[in-house]
Amino acid sequence: MKEKIKKLTEKHGEKIRYVIVGCFNTVLDFCIYGLLANIIGIPQILASIISTTICVSISFVLNYKFVWRSSKSLKYTIVGFLVVSFFSAWVVQSIAIKLTLLVFGVSWFTNLAAKAFGSLCGMVTNYLGYKFVFKTKN
Image (cartoon, rainbow, N blue to C red; front, side):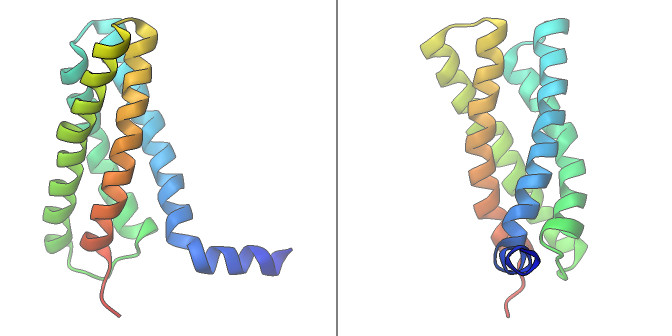
């Protein structure tokens, strides 16, 4: 069993670490978004932009050090990371949230469902973009 786990982590380690960090960031993002959109009453898109902006700074450190274990310069990676992250958060997630709310209407539940759908779309966009930002050529 130990050997199977070792092989799995060797083969898919970065994806496993990415999912762990992504889940943590998603929970944090949802908490902040829910507080802003459902309790304080900030419009959904603005609440999403604020929550994802806060989470991006945490995400950078975790992705740089833990997920990708990058050896690229911090200066180089932070610019690429921010471009990918903010495109995903502000464009991809915003479009997904808006479309979900247009289709299903606005309520506390659809606010969170829309954010979940946007987060899922953003995770895919981020993973693909981060591969180019953090990976070094072997």
